[in-house]
Length: 105
Image 1 (tube, rainbow, N blue to C red):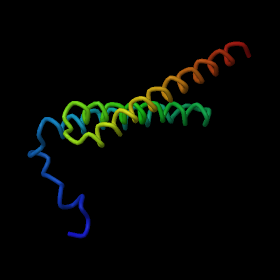
Image 2 (image 1 turned 30 degrees about the horizontal axis):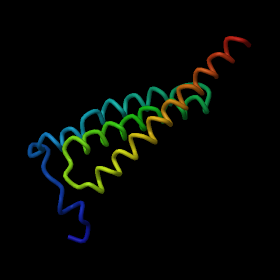
Image 3 (image 1 turned 45 degrees about the vertical axis):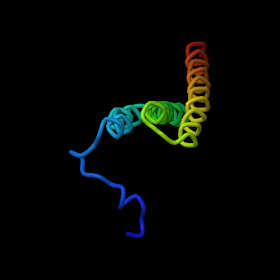
Image 4 (image 1 turned 90 degrees about the vertical axis):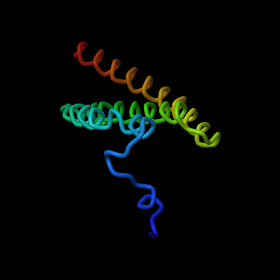
């Protein structure tokens, strides 16, 4: 086919441990994102939705480090872990500041 992804796709029952590790937590992430985005304040909703999105990227990157063979892909995975974990920490800190501001009002 014209799309490399189509050629590489596999049936759900054919997934090995590495692919299952990549997919693990996707439903949980989607549920957490939806719950987070229900916050009344749109800015808070955005940040609450982004945290599980970033955590899912970290989880996938960790699966790549554990199961991957290509050093370039593993380097990308480590870069993702480093940047996304830093951004998660920044978002949590921002949420804590917002909660502090709410209690002072």
